[in-house]
Length: 222
Image (cartoon, rainbow, N blue to C red; front, side, top):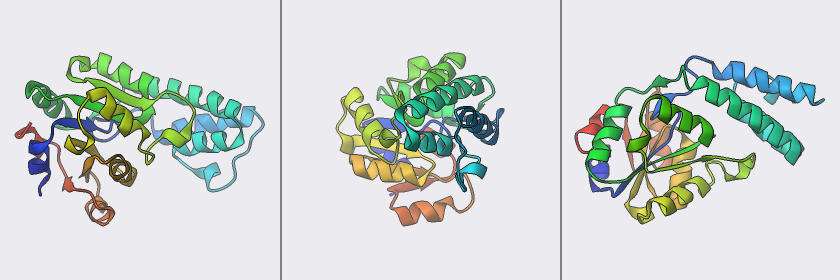
């Protein structure tokens, strides 16, 4: 089944945020945010070991902080959220994302954003671009509990409950393998957004229900 056919049958659309909706760190690179979070950890007296010490992924810093203590996790998560919110003014909208969201809204079917990014950052982005009327539910990071982030199905389960649509009638568009894993665990069908070379093959191996390389091909069926 093609991605367009799968979406045509769906009762609700769930979108990951970083990738399918926008490039969160287009203006403020993720590596810069990771460095800033490393500084937060250093100020608290912590020196992350390799490979975390040289990682360019802010989520690695958050996960490391969570391994230290709840207090460290809350401290780093708060700093991470602040940087994410700041990044929203320079985040780059994904080609076709607005058109897909607008067309889906016009079809009368509900839409949710499901993301490991902070709910505060997503809220800021929706307000900045005037997209809030198109989104029924936002299910995103609201605490320092990294165990609830994808690939755990918590955020997807929460979105499905909020939408009031059976999981099997929901389709989740994500650009990472953890998105596919979370969708499987939640009983939601998935479309892998293969926005970089090599992703199509990885999504196929991971068992994504369908794959698309451009969001614009989904707009016509919305």
